[in-house]
Length: 226
Image (cartoon, rainbow, N blue to C red; front, side, top):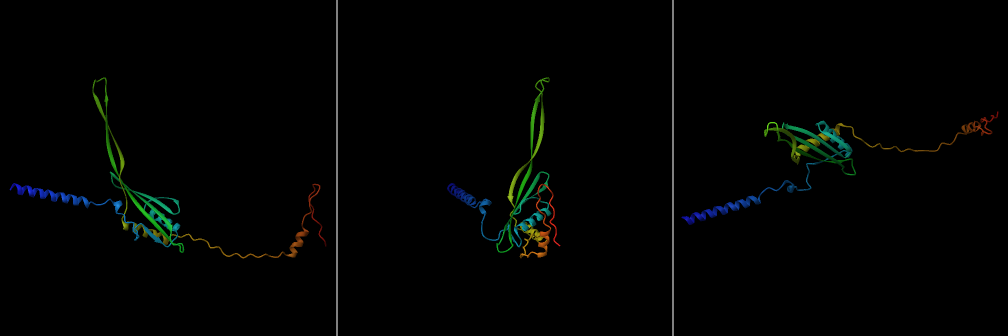
């Protein structure tokens, strides 16, 4: 009986060890190791039938219309931020980054690359205490407490939702159709030809030409021939 119990216990422990090893081997990989880097359709990019300058301007208007604060230092890059306050102790900041590049060189197209990062903050409260000794009263100490609150960053992650970016690209396309686009001015062909001088104008000009000044006297006009 004792040997049967021992064998059963050993078998149970062996199965538990194997299950533990199997569980450890199937642990999920970190997210950065799950990147595929494939050539399929990317949720972070979209083609537009517009120049890169017009696409970035439409992206800027799209972010501004949704309450984002944007900075435009270059015509091919847009950065925007928006603050959210889910509750009194947490704070969320969404940072948008848009890059516009030319598409096919043979046509007026562009590609917009976008990613949004969600940063989470929480309120951290810390209590500090100190004591002050009063020599008049002997060893009596009075505790002094103070509270200091600070927002601490607790998370930062790129938003992976495809629908989130689909709504943004749809709004960019809307502004591309409603905002006047820039277009280069095509210069017209200019034809020049030399006009022969008019003889009458040449004679009148010679007759009215002033004589050179001499001895500091004012120049006089030559007399006209009758």
